[in-house]
Length: 478
Ligand code: NDP
Image 1 (tube, protein in one colour):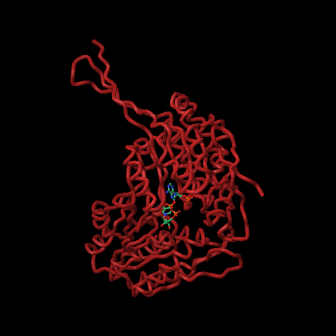
Image 2: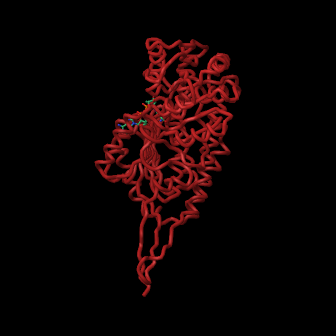
């Protein structure tokens, strides 16, 4: 069985312990053994990053561009093989796995370009004969902590801007899905990344992650994952007066108005609610449906949901792969039970016994729900959606905004006026019109409001806000 080591200071470093990476479509299949890094490994990685930081901060934009472009090219060239690994370790369908790998390639190529475009401002001073220069500098050593649900895209969209803007990185991927992050490390190494500029330490969040979070030589921390871990990181970073960027959960509303195109609305909700097994922070989990279209919408959605093929992630006919692990499956099943207890009519949602030993679950729809039920307040993170019937647009908008979260919000309507009002009044960071709440571009900002996000946005040019720090220089030429 192949052993996969950590990358620290340009060396592939073996660990005291290795963990099995198992396929959620078939628990009998071990994909590989991956290092379980220790606190000492994480400390060595921070030291290596610190030692490399001055050199990488002074590297030319061309050098940074070339590295990121080469990694982007290799990710695209190997997207079939890497996408297959992704589907085997996370459980997304093969099409989704390849698509996510190509997305990671696009992200690296986008930031290869951005490395050449780091701009500043030259402003006249209010005083005579003085110029004011505003320039962007790297933050220093950044710690990146990533979740299992986008095992290549999220490490890519944190690593690429960090390196493009001249920072050194220590990446700790989710323990459930280290394989894709290991591929990124291998490609960076193959493409000539200088020692220490990028370090990978795989292992537990409570060990490796916590060491990064509390390490005094980490200058900024970017995290995606659950609300409790994110809140803990925000508190520690606040105490240590250090930059943090947090992307956490969602309870994203999708409003369907009476005037919606029914086919468009059903397609958007099937995709947003159930695809990727509902394991997306942008999943459409609250379907807020106006009374006049409710029955027709539910009938068509249920038919579409029942036709979705659940199965092995690599089988060509599969549309919904397995849940990522046993813990998440048990949590999803307990929410299905809770929906019943709270008085919802439950369609689907049962555990499925298929040919392989995987964590399969039928998609679930909860009907006749209201927005105060726990199933509509807490993030489930599985293939489960609720329908909330409302009387009119104003009620739909109020219900959509009545949540602690604010990541993504959608509306299906043919009314320009309703779409415009929804865009303006939604309390989410991203708004979709006649599109699923999930599924975003790589070159524009990603992030939310309220309990969903904290700190500057990720992705696109807005990533510079987090990965750089601004310097204001005054020059007297008198
Ligand atoms: P976590 O927040 O625990 O995990 C996210 C990352 O943080 C992982 O790499 C994890 O490591 C790491 N981590 C855990 N504890 C610490 C710590 N004390 N210090 C530093 N890093 C830490 O989420 P889970 O994966 O356990 O998922 C739980 C729930 O979170 C899901 O059911 C879902 O509701 C939500 N979630 C939301 C995501 C989003 O995109 N918004 C993504 C993933 C989950 P480790 O390898 O040990 O897991």
